[in-house]
Length: 111
Image (tube, rainbow, N blue to C red):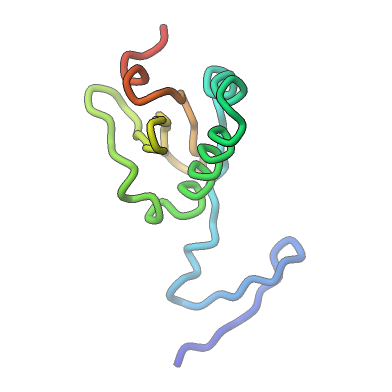
């Protein structure tokens, strides 16, 4: 039986155990201007779903393991959200969202 301790972090009690203490750290997310532009132009429900999946990945990369793969021919990773693709750079404590686009055209790159 493992002992459970409560630690205050930003006035929010969090329960830590030796097995899951790493799961509460969320990476900071940054968006490029191109990614923000796409999120503003697509339907609101789709944009919300994409943002939600990005936040899920930032908080627990293993949760999206089936939908994330490394890109070939360039650096970064690809997150699949339905027919949409999110190109990200996951290095260090910051998750950089580089581009968002439909499945067919996102890999061609935008100037």
